Length: 90
Image 1: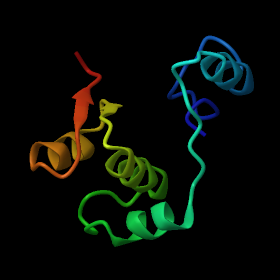
Image 2: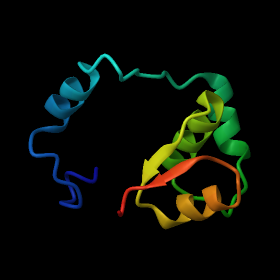
Image 3: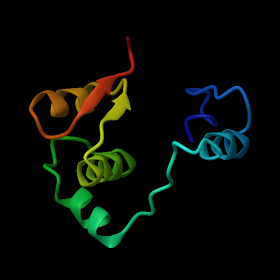
């Protein structure tokens, strides 16, 4: 959606970009398991209204891995100790 709105430029089509990223052996595609969907729904309402961001946060918590993001709401949530995050703005 961000590519379609002109807010994100991947330098190639989204499907080609995803295929290239997933060809890296360090990358793993994690399915949206029911426990992640429920965990995303149980996050505090103030954290984020975007369902995709909530799924990302729930997945990061489950995998104990940081989120790389420029999103200020997610970075604020991480600063409170709820998730690990790396600031992609720098």
